[in-house]
Image 1 (cartoon, helix red, strand yellow):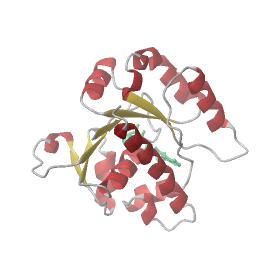
Image 2 (cartoon, rainbow, N blue to C red):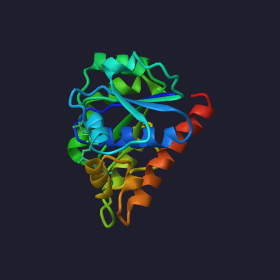
Image 3 (tube, rainbow, N blue to C red):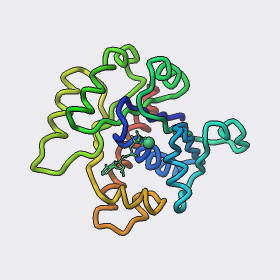
Length: 202
Ligand SMILES: Nc1ncnc2c1ncn2[C@@H]1O[C@H](COP(=O)(O)OP(=O)(O)OP(=O)(O)O)[C@@H](O)[C@H]1O
Ligand SMILES: [Mg+2]
C-alpha cells in the first residue's frame, strides 16, 4: 500500500504522521518512508537516532532493490493543484493532517472544492488536538463532517512526547514520557482505520 501525507499548511504534523504510520506498518511488513520534502525532515529524524524502517529521498527511491509491502511518502507543504493530482494518482490514500485552528482550516477550506472531486481517495487527520477543556478538536471535526469531508474517526492528541521523539530520532514509543504510550496508540488507531479501509477495497 502506498500512503502519501500532504497538506496545504506547514507544520501541521505531516512528518510526524509519516514517521508513525511507517513505524506501525513496518510491524506488518517491510516498509519504506520516502522523504519527498526538500527540507528533509524525515531524513533528519532518521539521522538523529534509529528508526525501524528505511528512509530515503525521492531520488534514491527508484534504486531500492528490496520489495516493500508498504510505502509512506512525506511531502512538503503547499502543493500546487497539479502536484496534488500527481500525488493522488500515485498513491492508494492521501492523508491530509490538519490542526484544529482557524488558520489551518482556512488553508483547508481553500482547496476543499478541489479535494471533493477525489471522493474517497483522501482522508483528513486531525492532529495536535489540545486537551480538555478545549473543544477545538470536537468543533473542527463537526465542521468538517458538516461539510461532508472524509475525516478519520480517530485523532492525534497534542503531546510533547512527539517533539521528544523527533529530537531523539525514534518513534514516540521509544521516548521516556508518561504519555508516550497514548501518543503511539493514537497513530495505531489511524493505521487500523487505513487497513480497514483497504480491506473494504476502497
Ligand atoms: N500531535 C502532536 N502533538 C504535539 N506536537 C506535535 C504533534 N504533531 C506534530 N507536532 C510538532 O509540531 C511541529 C510540526 O510537526 P511536523 O514537522 O510533523 O509538521 P509538518 O507538517 O511536517 O511541517 P512542515 O510543513 O514544516 O514539513 C513539530 O515540532 C512537531 O514535533
Ligand atoms: Mg514535514
